Length: 232
Length: 88
Image (tube, rainbow over all chains, first blue to last red; front, side, top):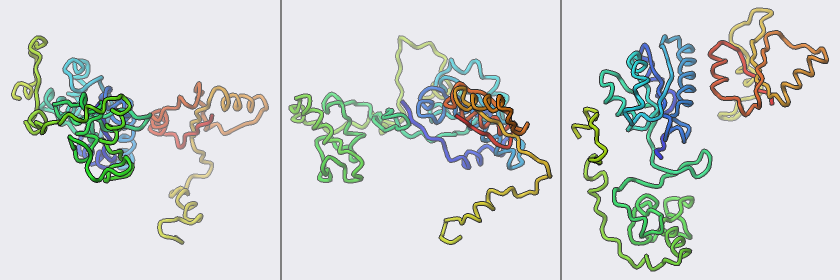
């Protein structure tokens, strides 16, 4: 899932204080799992902003709401009126959701309440860590299911560097060496032979280096794209 | 301050003291969230024992204080209570 983190409260306040009415708008899928941008967090942030406005003597009408996902058309139908009524929308979605909302309501100012941090997993309640950087050319079948692109600090493709020390990375002893993890995993599976395979130089054109990416399933297309979607 | 960044006990008391002079007889409005199984039962027992507490304290019974959502506290403060008391 996509993990995000709320911006510092003072920064959010500075963004919203000039508007007459604000809709604090949650996104109840990915960023709800990390307890930063869901509809519940929108309620809480809305309440904190109302208290702050009262404290500062500023008159702002602050409503809160949210939908399941701000990155899909269908969920917006029931809230279009609420969005139109507000001077600005403080979106608690990831960067994709914030932009999609802006594309759907181009006349509306959309403000980001979160910093989108990474695609990751829930290690334990309240603990999230990065696992994938969307390189677009997965090699997990060669590396025991552990990604050296994102887990190795140098994204090395064919074994560890000289900084691997007792299973830790040289950047920080708390960070495991990805290639140590890969070796241990493959050894446990009896598949150390996979390490003999030389992974060729990576083709980064499938990653961000090829510009913004787009994918189309022709059999599923029904039109109804946003203007930005059509232009891409 | 005696040490850099460490407040003395006197300073802490001054921080906690309200800045404005309060009118005499003023009592804070307190909203108490009480767990059904312990604190609320204790409040009930207090009633049976004819013990009293200020009328400015209002109690909301929860099935457990684990049910106490941060939003309930914020809504109470937005609504104008002076303090929230969680008991469980």
